Structures are given as structure tokens and as C-alpha cells.
Amino acid sequence: MDSGAEQIALLVRKVLEDMSVATTVAPQLGNDGVFSTIDAAVGAAQVAQRQLVAMSLETRKEIIAAIRQSVLEANEQMAKLAVEETHLGRVEDKIRENILCARKTPGVEDIQPVAVSGDHGLMLLEYAPVGVIGALTPITNPTGTIINNAIGMIAAGNAVVFNSHPSANETSRRMVRLIHRAVVEAGGPAGLVGMVHEPSLDTARELVAHPGIAMLVATGGKAVVDVVLRSGKKAIGAGAGNPPCLVDETANLRRAAECIVNGASVNNNIFCICEKEVIVVREVEEVLVKFMQETGKVRLLSPEEAERVTRLVVKDGHINAAYIGRNVQIILQDAGIAVGQSCRLAIFRAAPDHPLVWNEQMMPVLPVVTVETVADGIDFAVKVEKGNRHTAIMHSTNVENMTAFARAIQTTIFVKNAPCYAGIGLDGEGHTSFTIAGPTGEGLTSARTFTRQRRCVLAESFRII
Ligand code: NAD
Image (cartoon, rainbow, N blue to C red):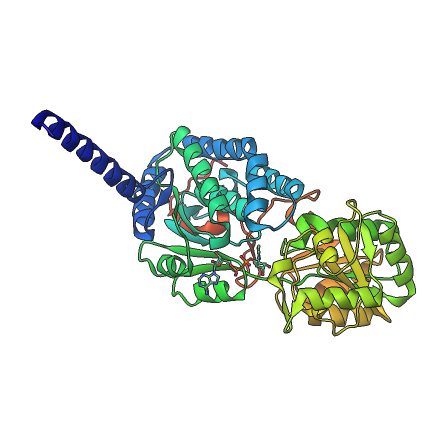
């Protein structure tokens, strides 16, 4: 090789080396909110959070509006990706989930201050940011939870670093990037929302222990809630549920049947709030089941078919993860049962001790248990809810019965005469939340949940009356 060619070769090698350095270093600096380490994500979030609080509330509102718009624009694509990657849920229902979270997650209006004026002057209570929040998100709702948490946490003036479920990594990464871009394009600081490129249980532990994290928010099962509660930090835990749906003899049975079918089949039952077992008073059981079949979306399993499906979806007393969130057609086909495309839910008459009554199945297979009286139904429902304090549903026209059930079961969400999802604002009143904090008591979390309260008092009279 002559010296000219050698020099060119050297130059090319140098450029290639520089490019490879750039690609390995770039994620460290953050690539649209995706970082190679937790430490880098938290460091960037700390800087971004300080920048956010220095900005006007108007800018913060514009950032929130931009997040809402961008996730709505990418909705269909994100819904498809979530189902493709996790194999959980239904695209059409994920689309509804994303719209719900984009539109009905409260923004900056949720942290309106409270003022009290009296003989001694004025007291102002403000909802201040906590700093950087570490948020652990579930496989079941990677899109909804990230949209919902990001809007609420940023609206309250915080930054957030997510550790998403490793099996929903690609969806979570794209969602974080989408939100990050929206924030920056609206004039917000880079790094305000972030995550690590390859989340794992190790990075989750690192996030929980990181000194730069001021608050932890866990949405998932009992294990992760316990982890954040043991952290020594301010923690919000949104845990598992097993929502019972009680139907008494006074219910409007046609409506109850439709509500239960729609609620229990939404997203193939992966929402934590979904009806997980029906408990019905004997007098009306037959009619309720008939009306459920008449929706055209239900397959009633014979006792022998129910046995086969149970053997498939319950392994050694635990729910078989392979069938969680799957379409009913797949589950029934694997059990050797043919069913048409219009079917969304399989139901079967179950003994009170059936494993699908006691375990959170998160699949469109719904047990129906018969009780003699509404009082028996309440007692049984309280037992199967297992103290999760999550969600319960009742169909009745007897106010006393509904009040008795609500008082006995003590759940965070209590839905009367509607599908479960009315309780999170889908075809129901009130804001939405995909982080329903039963164990720690914050309820349906929103921006105000992600704050700390600060009081300012002006001693002189500041009254204008
Ligand atoms: P999961 O508990 O397996 O995982 C949730 C998150 O926690 C994931 O990011 C996971 O990586 C992390 N995690 C799990 N164990 C951990 C540990 N020991 N240390 C650190 N991090 C850990 O739950 P999932 O299967 O992803 O989601 C389904 C569960 O979440 C169901 O039980 C459902 O009821 C519940 N859920 C609750 C709500 C709510 O608002 N209460 C909302 C959605 C889902």
C-alpha cells in the first residue's frame, strides 16, 4: 500500500472508530430519554426537574398538552406493538386504554392550591413537586401506565425514571421516547422522562435504592409493592386485585349480563379491575347465565369442558402464564373446544373452591359461583377479594344491599350497575388512573398524589372583606 492509500485507510478507520464510540456513548447521554444506566437516567432527570420547576406553569401545561396529543397520534401503532410484544390484550381495547389515559389523566389543574382566610390572616397550601420519581410499571398495561404516570408526575412538577417490565421493553422504550420528544418539542427539558435501555430486576433494584430518587411508585403484583414499601423512601403501591362481581335477586339482569360480559372481556381481562369471578344469588342464576349467552359474545362451558380448560390454565395451583391475556379462541382451541370469532369470553359454573375463583386469572375465562342469599354472597366475595382492597362490582337495585356490600368489602373502587371499567372513568364519571393505590391508600392516583404539601402563612390580615 502506498503512503497515500495508507493515510486514507487510517482516516477511514479513525472515522469508523469515532462512529462506534459515538454509538456506544450516545445512550449514556440519553437517546430521547433512553439511557444505558439508571445512574445516567436519574442524573439527567434531576437536572431536568430543576429546569421544569423554573419554567412557567403555562409551559408545563403546554408540555402536558403535547404529551396528550403525541400519544393520541401514535395510538394505533403503540396499541399494536404492545399486543405484539406482550401477547396480552386486544388491540381495539388497548386503543381505548390509550385514549382514556391521554384524555382523562388530570393535568396541572389537579394541583390547585388551597387558601384559607380568617381573622388571623391567610393560609396557603401548595402541592409541591417531590423531585425525581422512580416508577415500576407492569407488563399488562405498558402504554396506559406510562402515559398515565408521566402526565400525572410531570403535571405535579416532577421528573420520572421508569423501570418497565422487561417483557414489555420495546413498547415501553417507544412510549418513553414518544413522550420525551413531545416534552422537548413543547419547550420542556430533555431527560424529564427517562428509562434504562434494558430494564431488568437488577435495574429495578438499582432504581429503588438510588439516592437521587425521592419517591417510588410501583404498579404490579404484591412482590414489587413490598419492595418499594421496604425501601425506606416515600412509596406508593398499586397492587394486585381479584375483583368479585356480586349479582343479587333485585338486579336488572339483562343489563347486569351485558355489563359483566363487557367488563370481564375488556383487554382479555388483564386490567386489574376486571370482574374475575361472578357471585350470583341462586334465584336468578339461570336467567343471568342465559342473558350472558344472549349477548352473542359468550361461550358457556359444560362441566367437562370447564375441567379441561382448568387443567390447561392452572398448573400446580398457579395460573399458567402462557394463557394470561390471550384471546378466548386460543385458550379454548388448546383445550380442544371450537368457538367462533365473535366470542370474547368463556364462562362456567364453578364450585366455590375453584382455583379461578381464588386466583387473579387475567384471562377471558370467568367462573360463576352460586350462593343462596345476598348475605352469603357478600361474605364469600369479601373472602375471595383477599383483603386486596382493590375493586368490587355489584348489580342490584336494592340500595341497602349495595351499601352492605360496599361497607363489608372496603375496596378502593366500588362499581354499581356498570362494567368494572366505569370505575376508572371509561364510560364512567371521574378521572382515570392506571395506578390504583389500594395497599398504600392513595386510591386512583393523580398529579396531587405525586406531591408533598407545603404551607405558607401570612399573619397580617390579607382579607378583602
Ligand atoms: P409484576 O409484579 O410481575 O411486575 C410489575 C413491575 O414490577 C415490573 O416492572 C417488574 O419488572 C417489577 N418487579 C416485579 N418483581 C420485582 C421485584 N422483586 N423487585 C423489583 N421489581 C420487581 O406484575 P405484572 O405481571 O407486570 O402486572 C400484573 C399485576 O399488576 C397484576 O397482579 C395486576 O393486578 C397488577 N396491576 C395493578 C394495578 C393497580 O393499579 N393496582 C394496575 C395494573 C396492574
